Length: 408
Image (cartoon, rainbow, N blue to C red; front, side, top):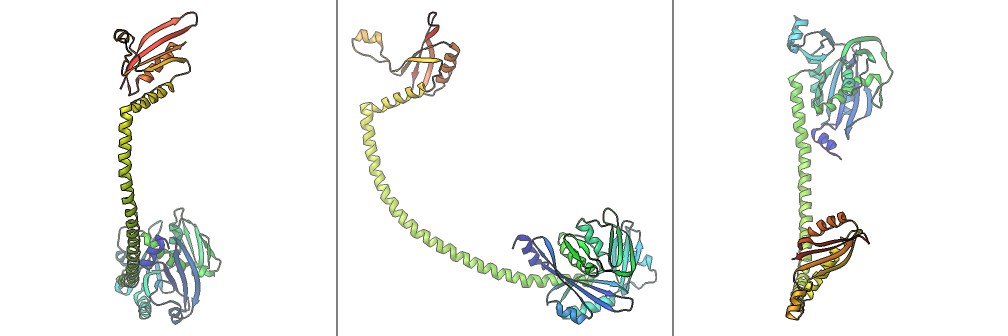
C-alpha cells in the first residue's frame, strides 16, 4: 500500500457510493447506485445497480459507508443567471421573489455566461438523510441536476463539447464550461466513455458524483448543495473515521513499536556478545602489537646506525629522478653526495660533498633540457638546482650539460 492509498484510507475517501435519485414524470423514483474506489491514484468502478425502493438501497450499502447523493428529475428547478458577485441566496431571491428561502436547498453551477441556480424542496432531501442516518450511512455531499457529468469531464481534461446521456444534453466550450443544456424527450442509452471506462448513460450522474468527491481531496470545486446540515454530517463522518481507523492505526503502531523494541534489544544482545569476543581477540592482538613495535624499533635503530636507511632513500630519489628524463636527453651521470676532489687531495683521504646532487648528460634540444630542469626543480627534496656547465659539441651536434643542486 503506497502513500496515496494510506491517506485515502485514513480520510475515508478510499471507497465511495454515488446514488442518483431520479424522479420521472409519473413521480416514480429510480435509485441508481454506483460504487467507486480509489487505488494508486486511479478511480475504479465495480458496481452499477438500479433499485426501485430505498430499502433495497440501504441493504446494498454497508454500515459506516460514505454516500454522495444526487437528486434529479421532477421536483428540481433550474434557472440561468448572469451575476458573478451575488450570493446564492441573493440570486435565489432575484429569480424567485416570492419564494420562502428556508423551504429549499440551493446549488450554483458555473457556466460560461454566468451560472445555473438549482432548487429542491428541503423536506425531500432531509427525509432521505434521516433514513440513511438511522442505518449508519453517512451522506457527505448532495447535488442536484445533471451538471456533475460536465464538471467531471472538465476536471479530468476531457473537454467533450457535446455530452448526451440519459434525458440530458449538455454542450460545453473548449474549456469545458457549460454553454447550454437541454432536457431530451427520450432517454439516451448509449454508453459514455470516460478515460478508459464505458459508463452506461443512466449511471453517469451517480458515477460523476462519486468521482468528483474522491477528486475533491485535492480541493476541486464541483456543483453541490449549500447546507449546514450536510456540513455537520461531513464532520461527524470524519470524526467517526478518525476514531475507528485512527484507533486501529494507533494499536498497530504500538504493536510495531513493541516488535521493533524486541528486535532492537535482541540485536543489541547479539552485538554485545560478539563485541565481548572481539574485545578478547583485540586485547590479544594489542599485546602482540606491542612486542612487534619493540622489535621494529630495535631493527630501525640498527639500520640507522649502519646507514642503510639513508642509502635506501638516496636510491629511491635517484630512481624517481631518472623516471622523469625525457627521450631527448641521455644521462651520463647522476650522483648524490659526490666526492669533493680538491678537499680529498688536500687531506689525502676521500671527502664527500654531503647533500649535493650532480646530474650530467647530453641533449640535442636545449629547450627539452630547460623544461626538464623545471620539472626536477619542483621536487620538494631538491633545492637550488641550476645549470653549472653547458658545452655544445659542433661535431656531434649535442650539448653536454652539468646540473648541480642540494637535497634535503
